[in-house]
Length: 189
Length: 298
Image (cartoon, rainbow over all chains, first blue to last red; front, side, top):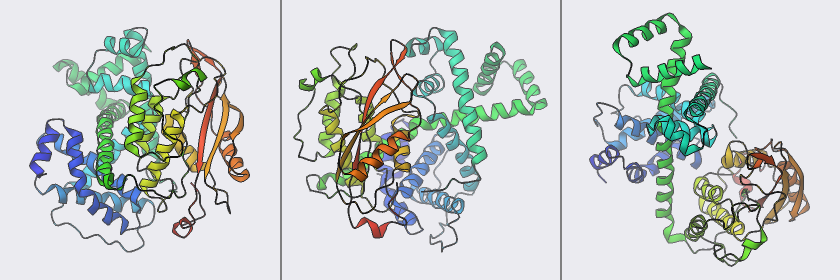
């Protein structure tokens, strides 16, 4: 599928179709990761993180594609994996991944910001289903609290609002603690 | 609480850009003077971004599975030796009356179902609704199992030693076992089943990280551990309801007993004791040893 068509799909909200097409780029990323002390699972994680980043980039205001999707994804994955190895203190062995000439200039800054958003995402996903559902409906679905209260079985709008506050505070707490742990990478099995 | 709720609303409207010009200026002045408030707003900004990514990642997961199936299609039907996998599936307790229910799609126990059929089975279970919602439990906690099948494809139990096809077969077979209703009767009626904190994924992670495959054991099979989650969520009275091998049984029992407290099941809002069964599948392929960096450990 051509790059323009994939981007159009994302613009139309047809995310799953776009991602399925983007998976054509996975084998190259898998080779990169496995050639540099990574496993198949690592490759999958890196690639999926890159897809999230790519998606958010495309959806951001004023996006235009300056290089091919292939080089863009590859550049993201290369940098993500390198950073991961650095965190695991495994960058000592030879790093064998050709630099891509067209790496976007603001890539480093983008990845730092995206790293924080990923931690926020993890904090939210670790919440209970009801919390996450409430927050998704409110912020993504833009549903009014009254409707959410009815759908999720809260006593009323007030109860939903209080619960939303508590869920957000819990998410914030977990997000903060992930950020604090950020520099000390947990032992990887 | 009222102040906190009011502040939350202000932050929401500020980030939405729906504060009036004066209100916005006032809020920004407050932020300028108060580092803690600035931190709160930044955190909320990050959380909104994180929230937006949750459905994106879910779509990516689906696309990954679709892509994998596309790769897989020619291989379905081939016999695959399953290597070094331990899987765990949460089973809700089950009333015997449902066992002959036509919702249970009959699948021969000796065939290792491939994923499309496992999916068809899960879908048919999902389509049916329990005849008596007040009864002790459902045949299978359908959402959990289906979620399990879909979410754990591709997740490696052991790095470098097990192919994804082998994992999928193991999981599909676990799904079929569940569907045929192997669980015994519930201890008490419960309209909400007990839940491992963080859900099924987290339980899988815990078991994966804590199970120590017994050395010098090359047996294949499943150990079934039955236990009670009491009203406080504590795991109690764990026993081996289906044995495999003494070493595997002991390890399965150990790791189940080591689980942290669950969220108890409830009947009409009141916590109750519930019985849960978890099958742990032990499979071993001799070749796996040399590919591992360290002794077999999940």
